Length: 565
Image 1 (tube, rainbow, N blue to C red):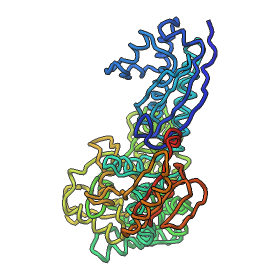
Image 2 (cartoon, helix red, strand yellow):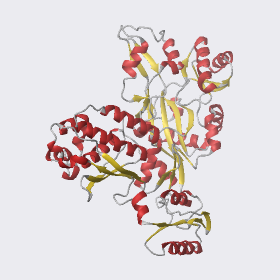
Image 3 (cartoon, one colour):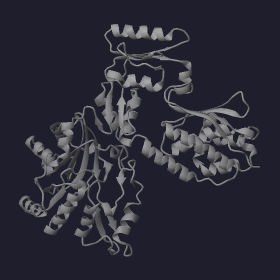
Image 4 (spheres, rainbow, N blue to C red):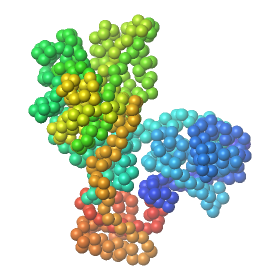
């Protein structure tokens, strides 16, 4: 027997606390039609086909309260609305969204169910609803369905629409402290707190991050000069504009040397341990191509391992050590093939921001090709079996060594951040031993970076993750600061607009700049800025974004709460 498609009669996204839960959710009315007479245990093969599509449904507790509870409900018999709820949750989970709440309730109309499930992002939540319906119908009617492609599509939506991991970890840390957040753009600009108590972040930058400091950090030569003047050890070096000048400077400061773009980041365009004129000339052109630079830095090569120290305020909160990437010849595969099979196959590597390490793409990274050539090979060469070839020396921060850092090294990193003027900084230094002072082992600070990536500290390959999001939130808000302003909500059936205006007026008399969203419009300190009915989520949120306001009053209707949360 073939069943007609389940109909989605209505759907909406509840953006705030609502009838069902304190968090955002999707609510839908589903008409399951004739399936009302056919619970899951009466459809031959349905349960097995559904689990074959989504084996991870075994982890759902459901009302049974233990792992496997939902599968037990499937085999005992449950209805399609309830099943779609669980499938929508699982599709989001597989796509990388942490959600678990869901409810399915019968209505007074036979076959019509009200289904609600947690969704962190509107488009993804609604898309998962439709995908869940389609998957369940395919399993019911024994038709093919590509669950992997569906999850891949949702993952792409997560990458495109959701906060990046660096920003998300800060928002999550704020949420743990009950500090509210509002996403201000489709990118990573987020407001923490409300009104005059708010702070703003953009990945690992905050509204405390100085534009001057950021400009200084992007000029590596200027950064080095300032650090030198304040006693921070840095490698000797100068900026150059021609390959010939680069070789001349390399001879002056002493070989081997390092060449890098003047605004280098993520190790791009950086070539290390250069010892010949040919290598210096090649490295110069690689650095010059990066970001269309006109200047290149030539500096002393420091022997040791690359480290990244994350400084937040006056503390070093996390430290990662880099690892050298190498391949081993098998006598049959080319260098390029070995990189794909031995390096890019590493599950830690990927092109998306969620991966702690990047894939190596030879066509985009000339410094890696130069590193290979320095060892006497080309990318299409076939190394003999057992031959070890270094592929990459920088940019592979994978090992947490926070507990190994010498206090003097930490103090030097904090000083470097303060010299540049950054509230959050990624300090790159090279040292043979992070547990000993830099001067003792001839280590040096090589870069100071604004807006440092946090993923390496959140997902280290070796060592434990560090609470870097919490450290940033603690830097922005004192322990007693929730980022909240006084908020008064008014709901009722008679004269709620007049009452809202009186409350707003009393708050103003107490000396607070007050916003009011009511049926008569949107008001800022008694001045009406929007004349239409402002009892809506979008207009009300304008008050919470306003940095001037010390208090807010919201008039709400029961229908608005049901429709929008």
